[in-house]
Amino acid sequence: MTPDLIIEKLKKHTPKILGSENYSKYAVLLPLIETENGVSVMFEVRSMNLRRQPGEICFPGGRVDPEDSDEKEAAIRETVEELGIKRDSISGIQPLDYLISPFGMIIYPFAGFIRDADAIKPNEAEVGEVFTVPLSFFMSAKPEVYHIHFKPEPEENFPFDWVPGGKNYNWRGRHMEEYFYHYEGRIIWGLTARILAHFIEIIKENGLDKV
Image 1 (tube, rainbow, N blue to C red):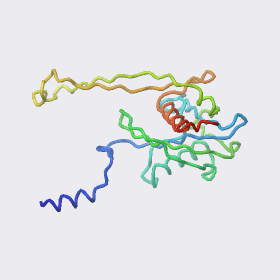
Image 2: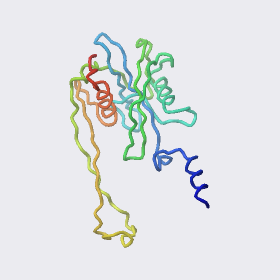
Image 3: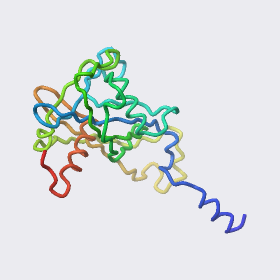
Image 4: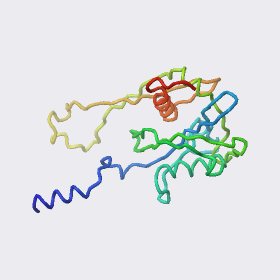
């Protein structure tokens, strides 16, 4: 193999997150809607009949399917399915920063506006209810942030004699931030709160924080 051939191989490669093919990929939409309280954020409460995270507050979204042309299309499809609205009811969709979860997931968030609020008919199999919170609340409220710590635990047959220090190797631990918002007795937390906090950070950039 020659240097020129190696360079040509590298030129044809499109960089991505190393190992991302092993991650589950999800897309969500942070839905904005105009109400009598001004622009508001819409949330779903997951149906109590769901196996995973019943009763938790979230945004519309789900796994990116092979049939989806991209992550944005997945977010739109999931929103249409969960809220029972037409595709053209969603407008102004823009991407936010994506997240890499320590639990083997990549989440691609988007924000967009939903028109025709009266036409929303949540899919009862997935959505228990929907509610809105004025965006102005989140512009002034700071989330509470707590930390979850992760400690590396090598498996029993790990080859400690192959690494400097052996069983005394100084493994680097890590932590994950968990965000919490409290609004009228409801608790918005987890990835939903983290995406929301990031969205608010963007809105406040350069002092453009009037809503």
